[in-house]
Length: 277
Image: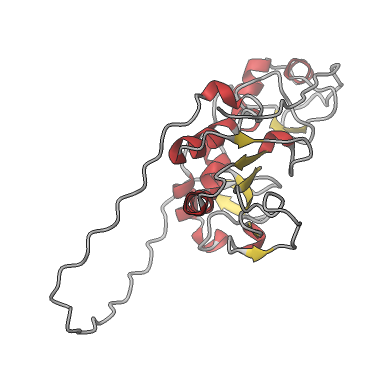
C-alpha cells in the first residue's frame, strides 16, 4: 500500500482583489469565489482558465499561484489567444501547452532556438511562440560504417522492457497536491512501487515531493530516476535525488554529487526522491 503523511490545507477568509481582468497572484485568504466577485466573473470561469495551475480541487489555492482572472471560461487555445507567451517562475512546457490547447512537444519544436535542446530548462522572461510552423530540424550527417569481422552477423534483439506488479489504486494518492497526484501514480504504476512516502519538511513542500521506495532494488531505482529525467517536462519535475546525487534544470539534468548525510536513507540509496513544481 502507499504510505503517505497527510498534507495540511487551510482555506481562509476572502481577501479583496483588484477589480480588473488579467493575472492575480494568490494571497492568504483568497478563494475563487472572492476573486470572481472582484473581477465580475464566476468562480467556474476562473477555475476553467486555471485548472492546470489549481488542480482538480477548486477549493485549494496555494499562496503565490498566478491565476488568470479574465478569459473565455474555457482553456485558451493558441488560435484564439495570444500568439506568444512570456515564461514566468514555475512554468514548464507541459503546463504552458495545457493552458493553450497544444502539446509540449509542439511548443518545443516551435521554440527550439529559444529553449535549446533540453525542453526541461526554461528561463524566466523567455518569449515563446504558441502557434506557427516549426523550423525543420537539420538532417543528420551520414556516418560511414566501419567494417568488422562480425558485421555480417545479425544485431542482437533488444532486451525486453522490465515488467513490474501493479501498484496501489489512485485513491491512495490524496496526500499530494492535486496537480502532482497523476505523476506520482504514473511513476508508481509503471514500476510497480507499492510504497511511496511524503513527509513534513519535504522540499519543496510535503504535497509536492515523493520518495519512491525501491529498497535494495538498485536497477529499479536507476530506471525510475532515468524515467523521471526523460519525462521531466511532461511530469512537471523540479529535481530528482538518487544515490547521493541530484539532477535538475540547473545541472542540465546531469547528475551532481551531494554531501554525505550519514545513513543509506538520508543519502537516498533506497529511494529516488522526486520534487515537483
